Image (tube, rainbow, N blue to C red; front, top):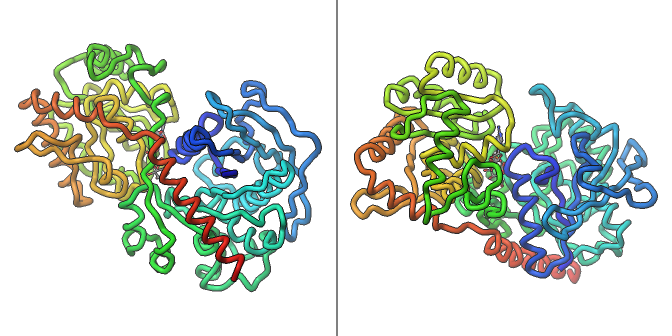
Length: 492
Ligand code: ADP
Ligand code: GLC
C-alpha cells in the first residue's frame, strides 16, 4: 500500500511527547512489511537541515489557505534515521520559524488553527507534487484532523486522491484543536459543514471532531482507551460522537522501538545490561544517584518519574501524597517540565528533602534513559493515559511500573499477585492520593521484605515484548478496512 503518514512531531526531528515516538517508529515497521510509506511533518526552526542532510525539492509548493489565499512553502526531503523511509518537511517561516512546536513559555500560539490547517493542506499538496497517490492517509491527533474533511470536500473529485482512504489515530482526546469559528474561512470548505454533526462545537470549530466524523476509520492507542473515550469521564465532550462512530473505532496498543529503548544496546546509559546479566543495572543506579546528588545506597529503592507535568499525569495526586510517601526509606527522581505550579512545587520538595527527592525540571532525553535504567520502580499515577510509553520502556529496563489502572497502563501492566508471584508491576484503581500512597507502600514493602518476588517480577517484565511488528500488522488490517469503506462509498 502507498501510505502518507502525516504527523506534527516525529522522533528524532521534533518531539514533545509519545506521538513523536510513534511517528518515528510505526512507519519503519510498516516499511518492513513492504509498504511504501512517506512521512510529512513541519520543518520547525529547531530541525537542523544540515545535521539531517535535508535536501530542498525543486520549486515551491502552493498551499491554498481559504481566505488567506495561496501561501507558499518550501519542501525538504530527508530520511528517517536508520531506515529508508522518506520524510518531507514543510517549511513556512511565518508559521514554523519559531522556538516551540505548539507553544512558548506555557502559552499556545494564537494562530495554531492557521498553522495546522496550513500544514494539513500542505501535506495533501506534497502528495500531489510527488505524484504519490496514497491508498491511505494516516492522520494523527487534531493537528492533522482537517485532512479527512478536506479529502471529502475540496479534494473529493481530485483524481490524485481517488483511491485514498483516511485513518485518524487518536493519541489524546483532551487536545481537540478547538478554535474560533473564523477558522471555517481558513479551511475554506464551506459553512454548510459548520453544524453540530460535523465541525461545530459550542459555536466554535473543533478540528478533531471533524476528523472523527470524516475519516474512514479511527483508532485509539490502546484497547482500553478505545472503550474509555465513549464515556463522559474520558470523552472530553466527544463521548457522544465516539459512541456514534464506534463501528469504525479500533484500539491498537503502541509498540516500542527496541533499537532506542533497550538496556542491552542503549548508548545513553552508563553500563549496558540485560535479563541474563543485571550487574550493569547496579552501576546505572549508582550513577543515577550520583547525577542527582542522592546518597549512593544500593539497598534503598529508587522510584523514577519522567513525563510532562500535566494534570493528565496525576501530578496533583502525587503532590498530595508526596510528603507522606517520603516518610519511607526511598529515593525519588523526577524529570519533567510543564505546569509552573508543579515545577515550583517539586523543586521545593527537592530542597526540603535533599536525601530523598531530586528533580530536573526540563527536557532531557539522555536523563530519561538514565532514569529508566537506574531506577527500581517507575511511577505513572495518570488520571488518564491513552497508551503511555514509559511504563512499557520500564519493563525492558527491569524497572517495575507502579501505575493507575487506566487506558494503556491498564492494558500493559499486570498487577503483582503475592499468591502466585505473577505480574509485572503494581496497580491502583482509585484516583485518590490514598490509593497511590498505599500502592507505593506495597511496592516498597515488597522490595524490602520479599527480594525473591521482586526478582521474579523483574525477570518476567524484562522478557516481555511489545514490538511494533504486531502493531504494524494491526494497522495493516485497519488500512484494508478503511480502503474497502472508501470503495463502497465511491459506488454509492
Ligand atoms: P505523553 O505522550 O502523554 O507525554 P508517553 O508516555 O506516551 O506520554 O510519552 C512520553 C515520551 O516523552 C516518552 O518517550 C518520555 O520519555 C518522553 N518525555 C516526557 N517528558 C520528558 C522530559 N522532561 N525529558 C525527556 N523525555 C521526556
Ligand atoms: C499521547 C498520550 C500517550 C500516548 C502517546 C502516543 O500523548 O498521552 O498516552 O502514549 O500519545 O500514542
